[in-house]
Length: 216
Image (cartoon, rainbow, N blue to C red; front, side, top):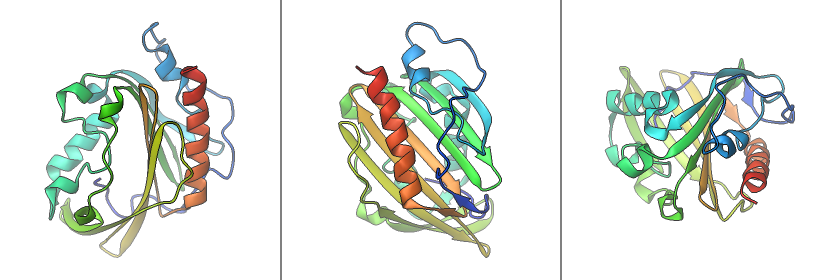
């Protein structure tokens, strides 16, 4: 996980439940309609930053931006860049059908992806050596400290983490959630100056409701 500390301000929390408004975007095909249907609607107080975008996971804008950030950063522990997340550098994952949407507000951002993958692709737990490490991001020394959150189990498998990124007198927090339900894996990143675990858990609950609905 690579993020620039201080990129967002304020609290990032879904204390306001999402509305039923869907973002405009391309019409899904029969094969991808359930992926788009599994995405969250626009949270109250936020706007669509981009998407929904449908296609091979590795080709999507958010995925490409994440891979570019990893390539540009110099990590103390390179193996920690995508730890506990879907690894789009692997061909099988990069080519998998996916839907992605991103929301933004002054207080932070939410990026969500739903990918059609076998259960074996579910990310492994965060390695112990990745709980704390440093990286040079755009010339700024950033320290990442991650802890596993005790989130109620969602879907067939789920994990949640909270990362604090500190650098250049600026701090940011990144909440991450991965949920698998059947052959769908949902990945979500919530970025802000402060990310509340309970807010992250509520977003995970809402996301899992959508996964359950489209996998019945």
